[in-house]
Length: 56
Image (cartoon, helix red, strand yellow):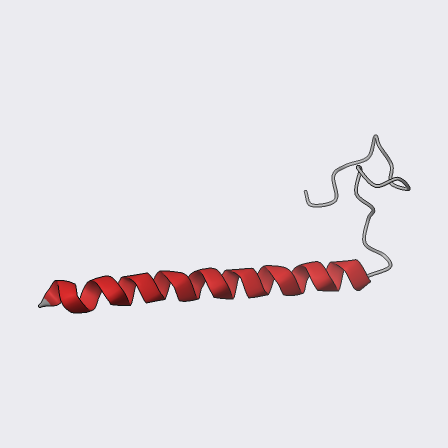
């Protein structure tokens, strides 16, 4: 009886947590792309190849 409720609850809870994490990460990425003061990536053509990585 416990397994019939617990297993689906854990599965949907994990799925929901993953979706929430993805949405938060997506919003942070969108905000960073629109920020003109955000440092350029070291891999970008116009970025500093010897600089500190942008996400550190």
